[in-house]
Structures are given as structure tokens and as C-alpha cells.
Length: 77
Image (cartoon, rainbow, N blue to C red):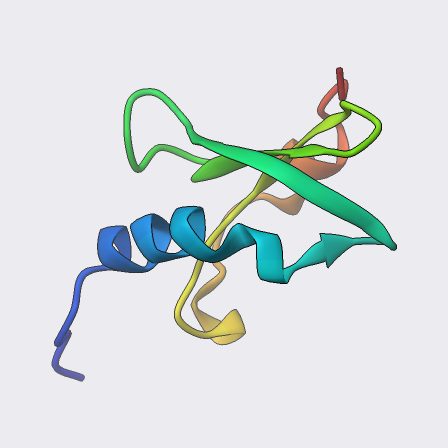
């Protein structure tokens, strides 16, 4: 399959429109990229209760080929 637009564009787009989304009923108040950029997980979202949660941005859910335990086991701030 031809890759028309790199996933980094989608990550940047999400950072611009994150206010359209929530996580388990809590508003996302800010988003930051992981460092180095485009490492797993892609981004961290800060919720209205100031918890920071990791998120992976993919074009399709079938593209998710990472160890999900990394996200589940993170100690959220």
C-alpha cells in the first residue's frame, strides 16, 4: 500500500484539534509530543484532572502493532 501522508502529519493534526475529544468523559486540556518526536507512545494528553495519559496515533486501528502493555502499565501522573 502506498503511504500518501506520513503519520507525523496526523500526530500534528491531533495536537491542533485535541479539544474535540475527551477520555472517559474527561476533557483533554493539553497535548504534548513524546520525545524524541514520533517515539512510542506518540503523544501524552493532559486531562482536566491533570492526569497525563499516553496515546498512540494511527491512521487505522489495524496499524497498531505496539506492545499495549506499555500503555496499560504506565504510571499516570
